[in-house]
Amino acid sequence: AAKKAGRDRAVTFEESMYQAAVAEAEARTELERALDRNEFVVVYQPIVDLPSGLPIGVEALVRWQHPERGLLGPNEFIAHAERTGLIVPLGAGVLRVACQEMARWHREIPGAAAMRVSVNLSARQFQEPGLVDMVREVLAETGIAPEKVVLEITESMAMEDVDATVLVLHRLRDLGVRLAIDDFGTGYSSLSYLSRFPIDILKIDKAFVDGITANREDAALAEAVVGLGRALRLQTVAEGIEQADQQSLLTGLGCTYGQGYLFARPISADEITAMLREMRADS
Ligand code: C2E
Ligand code: MG
Ligand code: MG
Ligand code: MG
Image (tube, rainbow, N blue to C red; front, side, top):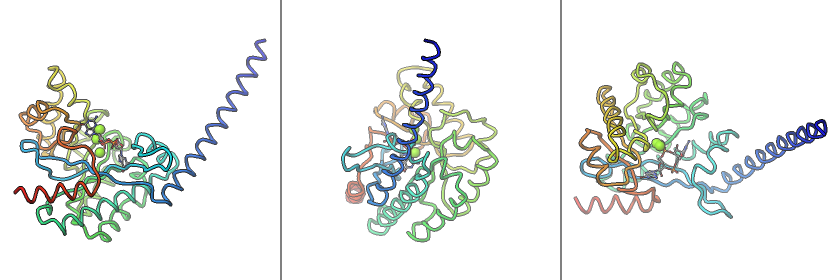
């Protein structure tokens, strides 16, 4: 019986390996088709000046308008895109669209000239030898002012190979773009490494913002991260602000910018256009 169970288990294991390989191939084909058919769309979430709540820029966030499953968020496909390598063309496409649209807002809405656009880079993209050339091409092609473009890499990506990260960040910075560390506080940065990165912005992860008004420990951690940003002369963006008292507390700590449902959810390019025109009308 033991032998039979062992053999059964081996078969099951092979089967599951086979199924995983099939699922992987299917995911790849589906993603390739989606790219061909332009099913990916970019939405934008405003980033605001913290005391005033006025937008200073947007973060580009990708969505998949799936023909059967509806609008999908990145959590449902970015991991597949990473594993299959399709994140490389997908990510380049997001950067191109985001820069095109921001360049258009700069041109067409006079009050919007100072707006920045942030774009997420994945680990796979960051390791690609062609990354810097791709970014240079998109900047040239779209005519956007490079200093209005922010590239976000996560803290854990940055820490994977610190020397390589420092090198790539310097090459990107030489193009004139700004750099942000995303989801800061969730990885394991050594502070001495952080000071080696030529970055401009620290994005404080939502995890720190969540409990900030409810418990002292979270508030103390948020204060420490904002203080760290100030010590390194970085701008700080608090992510995931949902309540007005989180806004006032973070403002009090000296956090520069914020992002969260309290101010706005990620919205379409057309809605951003309307928002920017309205801002212009208000001022
Ligand atoms: P992220 O870069 O940290 O982006 C912020 C995420 O937090 C977004 O989720 C945004 O919708 C969400 N968020 C913002 N404010 C609030 C809030 O007040 N409450 C809550 N509950 N959530 C809030 P989204 O769009 O689902 O993106 C998730 C992650 O997927 C992003 O995290 C980023 O890591 C990744 N991602 C999104 N677009 C791209 C892309 O174009 N390329 C790559 N490589 N990754 C992307
Ligand atoms: Mg981000
Ligand atoms: Mg983030
Ligand atoms: Mg985050």
